[in-house]
Amino acid sequence: MQTADIIVLDFGSQYTQLIARRLREEGVYCEIVPYFEKIENIKAKKPKGIILSGGPASVYAEDAYRVDKEIYQLGLPILGICYGMQLITVDFGGEVVRADHHEYGKAELLFDEVNGKKSVIFKDVPEKTIVWMSHADRVETLPEGFVRIAHTDNAPYAAIANEEKKVYAFQFHPEVAHSEYGHVMLRNFAREICQIDTKWNMAHFLKSQIKKIKEQVGDEKVICGLSGGVDSSVTTALLYEAIGNQVVPIFVDNGLLRENEREQVEYAFKNVLKVPLITIDASELFLSRLKGVTDPEQKRKIIGETFIEVFAEEAKKHNDAKFLAQGTLYPDVIESVSVKGPSKTIKSHHNVGGLPDWMEFELIEPLRELFKDEVRKLGLELGLPEELVYRHPFPGPGLAIRVMGEVNKEDLDLLRKADSILIEELKGWGLYNDVWQAFVVLMNVRSVGVMGDNRTYDNAVAVRCVSATDGMTATFSHLPYEFLEKVSSRIINEVDGINRVVYDISSKPPATIEWE
Image 1 (tube, rainbow, N blue to C red):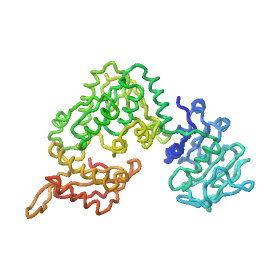
Image 2 (image 1 turned 30 degrees about the vertical axis):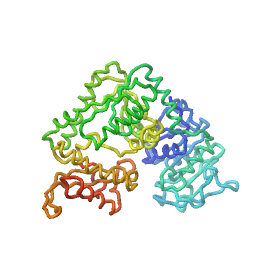
Image 3 (image 1 turned 90 degrees about the vertical axis):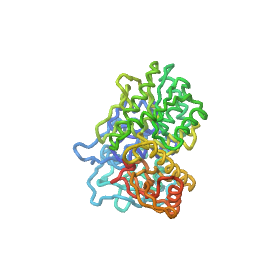
Image 4 (image 1 turned 180 degrees about the vertical axis):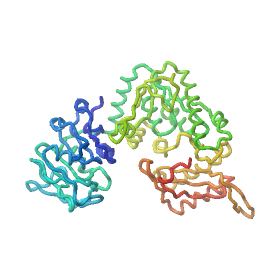
């Protein structure tokens, strides 16, 4: 079992993941578990501190989430955030009531000195710093042994502490970006109060993960489906670093990839990492089955089923393989044990993407402890090219859902040229990393145009560029007009068959990022 510097007990806050992210950014390895995690499991991780997260419940409600009070007997420093603060207050004998004045949004934090100095948890935090509040309950009476260490205009007890017991609590959320020095406060809790002096980074993770993979796999083979995306690419590279030729990496070219994508993937793995990649060219098979199909869901279904068929056929050739690798990330793991809804079951025998029942493998998930940004850092640590590590997300069905209507080779070739111009210009203007996802959509709508003295009746395409943090919500990217003009001009002038370019300015929701 992986040890953790700090354990976060999750009470259902939408911000809980941010706590772990902020601490990891400070070099402190942090894990999230549900508030009902067994004490034995927490002890086994040998933490040096505990954080109680926020949550939507009220501590005085009959069905309020409670923590095993043995947590307080472990002798570890504890930090409560929002609901966590209110729970600490009640558990230690204080009182929490519904607030007369709800406090949502930004507030100015004012420090209260204890014995002539501010609390160590606010070290290097300036006076009157801005913090983010989101609460309808408030602390009415402090527990015995606790003192006020900060307040706001509307929250008499914005932060409290029992410094003898090393128990601290914030009514605000230090983990969100709106709390200007929140990351410093979390760092202080870890470094100054928990006395965590080690620095966790990708080099440490790589070393420990290689050891773990070797112990788990032994002399067995591992099949790894490589899509070309960052998660599967890093998973494959990590496995190869750990066990070499015991990895069987399979890359399926479905004919729906971006310009030069197959070549980039093959070069990265065969030439840079020296991984013996198996490439299967199934482009003709996929395109033949998509002929005449216009319904988006039907296209997705055909692509998914065909991939399974092709992948399974290749996997049969390696029937001595015991493991199947999957690029599961930490947000997926957190979601599976979320206190906000029914848990998903993560099985040891897992049919990825609906693989046939006969394909029974033990699942290996070497990235399940990492966030997306950490996966990218690991990719660089493993020697993957930056272009591959930082490439934009790409949907499983590929360009098929960016061609409206029937998919054919001619339309795909036209779309690839237009799309490659957009990406080339984004990189040339230094905008690529500022955009979450960018692509061109072939609308299969024709419009009248004029080129020279001639009338044209050709395709219109839509340029889609969005800004997002996790893809759950997104806004259209507010790119310079000069950039958009350049992209439009190049696409129309360089791609035969396109005479009009439009820019998609819809946000998610109500629209989706992809068109189909």
